[in-house]
Image 1 (tube, rainbow, N blue to C red):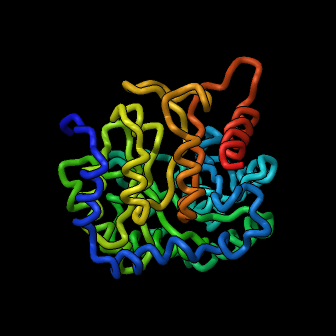
Image 2 (spheres, rainbow, N blue to C red; image 1 turned 45 degrees about the vertical axis):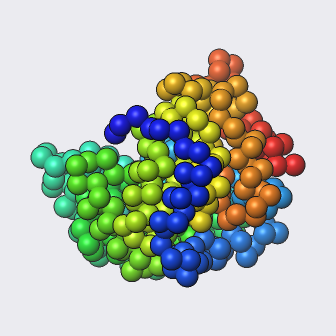
Length: 327
């Protein structure tokens, strides 16, 4: 991707004019306001002044193979009520072989892993996703709501698998799926295809960007399907583009499913403790709060745990930082 040209407010206003028609946007974004979490505000321990502080799990706990019960107990201990939950613990709960679900090579690669990928595909297309309602109930009974479902390897999935993951998201009560933004030569075809399933199921999918992803990439993605959206990682945005994500969020909040909250320095800086980098975390959180946008502020814990501390203790600090910003 060519180096990003800084956007002005006028540039963002122009971008908005090339979006899908307003009626279509309202239809697409209606799914962002109907999650179970938003109808159970009294149980949401991490909703502060209208903004749901969430957590990307099990990723933030450093183990994508973490069992569902351990994920839940950690979230309850942290007082987190909004999640971006990866599919791995759900699929194991539904009976998928753990060695297939938790082996990224089996999901993402061909060759020696092709047989495992075929087995996983066969399992996915035969399972009854409505059984995920029991998983959802256990979490919601504990005051933890699955608002976003993160799907790995989505562009390699068959049509039947795509129907499966969108159905799984609905069964879990999610208002959107998420995945990494496509970067292969076939990226436009890939995101057009996945977007067609998002449109079919009327469930948004937020594409997660890294340091080389900018507004132009997401605008291109939005043009491919009405329910294609953006998962804006505000730390990556600052580190890779050397500018604030605020103007993009203002211009395209209608297509943003959730943000990833982390702190980084500009010029490809690493993830560091909240409040020590260049990421305008407080400004972004208050922007969402003041405009009452249905955008989950999803903490993605990535910085190195300091000597003498623990991952859970550090995650608790990031949650408190966000609480304080929204107070």
